[in-house]
Length: 223
Image (cartoon, rainbow, N blue to C red; front, side, top):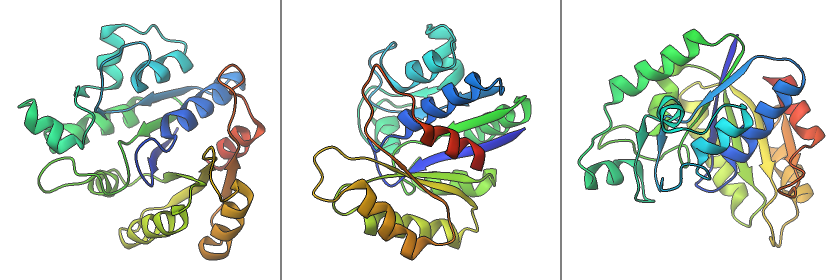
């Protein structure tokens, strides 16, 4: 059994896309796999939201019950979790969040993916961030970033704060940003200069009907 925390340099960076690709790769190779995304904001579509995408990749029914199993803390407003929780008057209990994640890890038969929300430093309440959750769980992190202009600083900053908490990095995934002035190859090459000896995997933009790519097998081999 292995568990990995899928985090990112920011929101809408491709964490769910990468998680779904890893799920499909694991299933195609007969590897037991499960996934959770404990906290999600901007949730207004059962089928097309991040929890539904994870369930579809897992070949599980996209039902209200299954959504609740994957993502217990769901908020409709697309803002930071601590603000969404405040607006909806449903605070995120950090101890319960940790307990939920640890139970998922302990009950997993194979690979367990825990997908975070937003970037590394997104607040979960008035005192704790996603980084604090990772620090308590003490499992390796898979850092997803993009090829957009600015990603180099964002990625290296994320790596710095993860290193300060002694969180192991399984790999860095550079998920291609459409229309960026910087190519995915240039981004990956530059990061390699600063982030060695970490493994860096470049993932090109894939069409919705063909989401498979050899990069997912390479990432899976690192987990």
